[in-house]
Image 1 (cartoon, protein in one colour):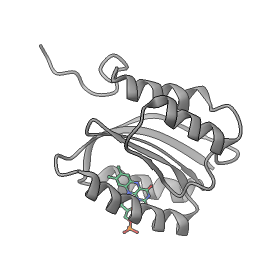
Image 2 (cartoon, protein in one colour):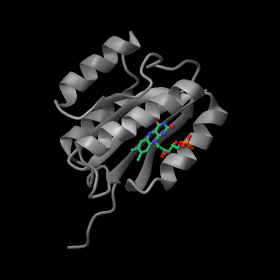
Image 3 (cartoon, protein in one colour):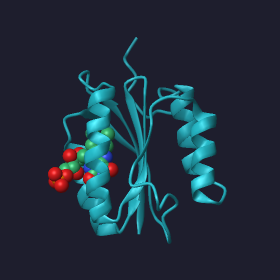
Image 4 (cartoon, protein in one colour):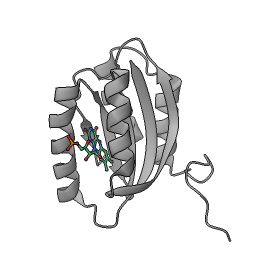
Length: 141
Ligand SMILES: Cc1cc2nc3c(=O)[nH]c(=O)nc-3n(C[C@H](O)[C@H](O)[C@H](O)COP(=O)(O)O)c2cc1C
């Protein structure tokens, strides 16, 4: 199994209605493919953790990467895992509330302490230190 954590910039058309459509489609597809994870939408950016059988994950991530509903897709972490953390979340969406609420829900679902890389990615995303974390190209001054 494998897990990918990435961040991206949502297209300007992305709003709550478009987000709900996207998540609805993703859940149906993830159910079929045995994928799970979460998607955070804040400040017109996405942070997604998607995990599952390697072959299904790689194929789905290629589709995600090409999706025009976002750009600047930047992988934060990609690694082999022995078991999914968020098995029951066919794609849990967080679009309001801060890092603390999201991390509490994630820890409850995982049933174990979150891997540092997941926790750090969520903290950094909500902390808006994307430029400092070097996750998104910085505009020249
Ligand atoms: C931010 C974002 C997250 C997405 N997450 C998923 C996902 O978790 N699973 C999925 O199948 N598609 C996801 N998609 C949609 C894919 O890009 C693509 O539309 C979908 O996999 C196509 O599935 P299909 O080939 O079965 O129609 C996501 C798209 C975006 C923009």
